[in-house]
Image 1 (cartoon, rainbow, N blue to C red):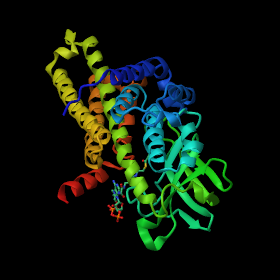
Image 2 (cartoon, rainbow, N blue to C red):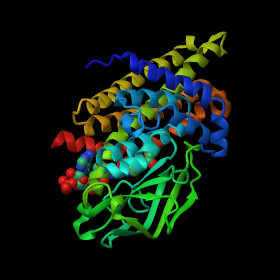
Image 3 (cartoon, rainbow, N blue to C red):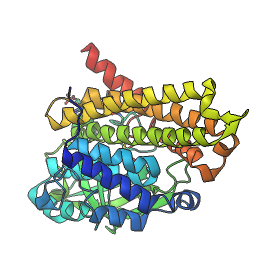
Image 4 (spheres, protein in one colour):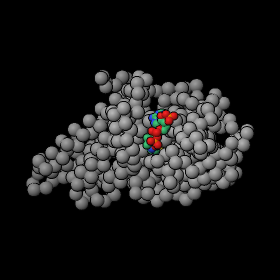
Length: 379
Ligand code: CAA
């Protein structure tokens, strides 16, 4: 498989790297501390075309491939994973699904604003009692003829407070189980739709995570995505691509921590020499470098599978499983290499370590990825 990048992909990578250095780095510690959403930064990302990267330009997108998207995700995540999760959800879970399965009217009304950053999207599947077990949806969307009435609660919703457009998964016909589930577009401000409290999180603290409450929310039928009962498949297909984005995020967190550790090890002296000259540190760097490159190849492979219309459920799950493990292990080692300095905020690696953890949890935990992988290889 050829992983060499073309000129356009290299330019995207460079632009994302530049953006992360010039726009994200300076405020990232303060945003993490204060749990402040990167509002201005996201606006600029939208203006640069990073929020609808894979969408057709006729809907305001950048018309790029998935590999360009993962390259940008990696670069942004090296510096600020709170910003990259906003980018990932908007690109993969909202824009991609709307473009692929939405009606022309839905694309005109919503997609054109979501690709440019005029609006941000949220993907609402998880519930207090339906996390990994996603078919157990308790939120209901009762069919009333020309509209649905939605009731229920969603949990841990990324962009929960800042989004304007919410894709909400809800059960219409319980007897049909997952085949009775629908995906509905619900606008912020719709009567009965309330934003719950913001979560106080271990990592990605700059991102905005809320519960959402729906009390007799009236949603027109034209806001349903796909045929009646398509909602669960919509969620699964969308998440399969989303996992590639989160795998790229994990890769970026790992690579960011490694780059910091490498630099530090050449500056910090102990026992009369730079610590990189001690084999204990050099071997850690060797392991990190090797594992990050292995994760990168899996991430690129899954992106190329998607771009070449090959099945990417398996490769995306493998990429997410492995890259998130590497992110967790690499960031812990990066803190270790930094010693006491690694434990304080100014050196960035403790934040990357906290941010890494969520990549093993959201868009399907590592255990869920193993279900997807094992089912695929055993069938
Ligand atoms: N593509 C298309 N259809 C799929 C699919 C896929 N990748 N995976 C499953 N399906 C279909 C199946 O074919 C089946 O349909 P039929 O019966 O009509 O054939 C249906 O979905 C149900 O599939 P399963 O029987 O496999 O369902 P299951 O109950 O065993 O669950 C699961 C499968 C993979 C474990 C699934 O529940 C799952 O992915 N759980 C994790 C949920 C998750 O990732 N949540 C993340 C929340 S979003 C988030 O985190 C965003 C954020 O904030 C950043």
